[in-house]
Length: 301
Image (cartoon, rainbow, N blue to C red; front, side, top):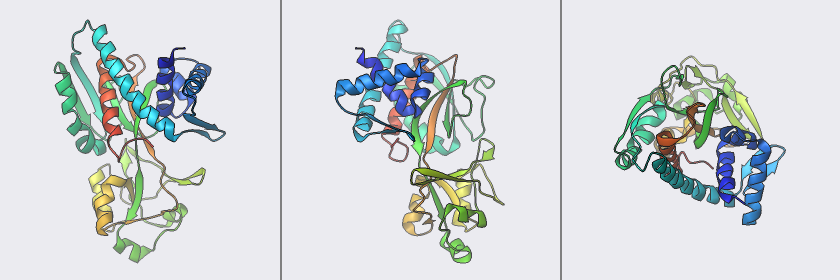
């Protein structure tokens, strides 16, 4: 039994969130993915993934195994990439598109180790909240936040954003405290514009999900602008929990809707189908995925 194949398919299931998604990424039949993961679980004599009518969830043991497996596979991919290139170091230029909200805080500061390890690679990092067309704009790799929009692209989930809904004490004193996500329709909201539009706010409610699209008089694609607006008492905002953490601790902002936690938002590495995730691009994706696993605000759970 080729357990290495089963391990790789297991990591793809975790990253894609489904057997069908993993099958698409690896270009194999869904039944093959299911059979290989089941065989791996049989070999390990433990359940890695829970299956139910509502979907898949990873077990605690599965999470530990995933964290180990992706590191092992990244090392193996790096060795294979070097062998395929004739034992020479990868070289060339990689054009990467990343969201502004992640660029300066998380991605740029962690590229030094990658550049040190591969001195003949050059990275062009384009930070923007605008949607980019990988083919037309000549982008090799895009890091995107949210659901996969184009099924023709190759996607690997490498992390999550954990949103939080907050408001200033002054705003709540003037307008009241919402008790349910539906109450937000009667409040002033400050949606963050991403890739040209503001997205629906999603909340977990037991096994279900509540979705609402906020009506706003002020929208911006600047995360710092949303932060400044909510601090100034202009309305209620939803954004990454790390962005509000210091103000929440200081009492300058108040977390809302504790019984309706916002749904986690996936962070994905995207490449065009004809490039797939091979060679130097694969090495960069693996590096970013490893960085995110060490970052409490972004790692998958």
